[in-house]
Picture 1 (cartoon, rainbow, N blue to C red):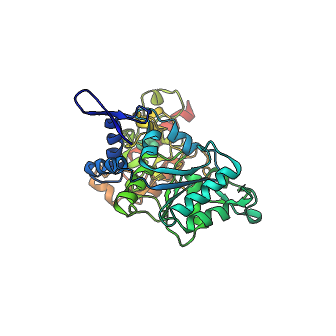
Picture 2: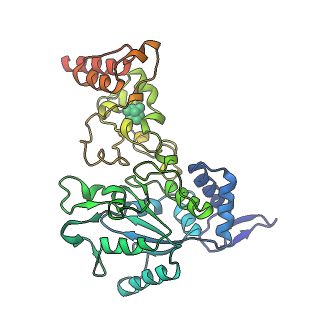
Picture 3: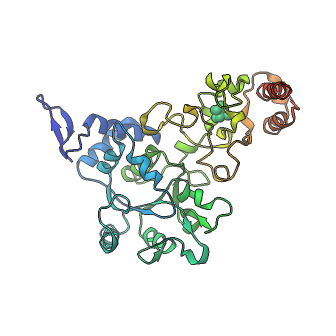
Amino acid sequence: MGWRMDRLGAPVGSTEGDGVDRRDFVKACMMAAAAVGLPASVGVKWAEAAEAGLKPSVIWLHFQECTGCTESLLRTSQPGIAELILDLVSLDYHETLFAAAGYQIEEALHQAMEANAGKYICVVEGAIPRKDGGIYCQIGGRTAIDILNDVASNAAAVVAIGSCASWGGIPSADPNPTDAVGAPQILEGTTVVTIPGCPANPYNFLGTVLQFVAMGSLPALDDKGRPLFAYGRTIHEHCPRRAHFDAGRFARQYGDEGHRLGYCLYALGCKGPETHANCSVMPFGEVSDAWPIGIGHPCIGCTEQGVVFNKPMHAEATLPENAYPPIHPDHRASPSAAAAGVAGIIGGAVVGAGLMASKKMSERGSEEESS
Ligand code: SF4
């Protein structure tokens, strides 16, 4: 990749005709570095490595899914993250983006695996069905199980992008007719980095891949394979509406006064308290507030196995221990905040002086029932 220069010799854009400004390119690399907790200078090094042609080979597999993760990546606006990612990696196999089909694309897969044996990154998008030997998802006469085992066996790293590839996602929703699971369940014993989300945030993916390429290491992961830099905290812990939760101000119906005023969405079924993700601090497409809570919809827990596609969308979330701030020293002596909070909300039994939020919710709920 080269850069166009202005009259003074400053780089202003790619020479490859896509119009990606070098400043945007470096900025995206710096954001990806920041996403994984690395200094901005590392992002600049990534950009320089890509400019020198040091791009990792990526083999991207599609199984049971809607292609939403790829679509999300392609539909971002400024800067065009899709172009930037394609500048940073060598995407050697991707069924959705390839113009080729049939035998040609099968040949491309085998060539990419041979040419980059042991060095390529295997990206998995979509769930893998196990029922009846996996016959419900076949490509080129091979089941998704066979393809994944084959491609992953010679990969330097395996990354499952999206909730479907991470644990089964929508295809695995009850009653899970095809016994769909994620890549980690097929590749037992292999480290699989999972980037759940419906869709996954492109920066979380990019940061993970670039760290592996630039530093030869994977980011620290939690027990579900999720990078801690992105999934180490719950949405609730860094939600811009958190102050309303703590103060007991809740939207109770879409369009009511509380909703219009931007109050907490817990009573509408927000799963932020039990969902680990960085949506509020890493907006999609770099558009501020471009995430569910940002536009007034409760978090549905799309990064959390057992929450999204399992719990009813408007059912109240299970509250964690840290759901309430220690406003008063007495709070520390209170019973479990989680247990008490749920009890207070459901039954109106408020236990402990610190449970201001559940108390106010309970009071308001009673008022509405009697009105
Ligand atoms: S319940 Fe949802 S909307 Fe309310 S503060 Fe927590 S994450 Fe934000």
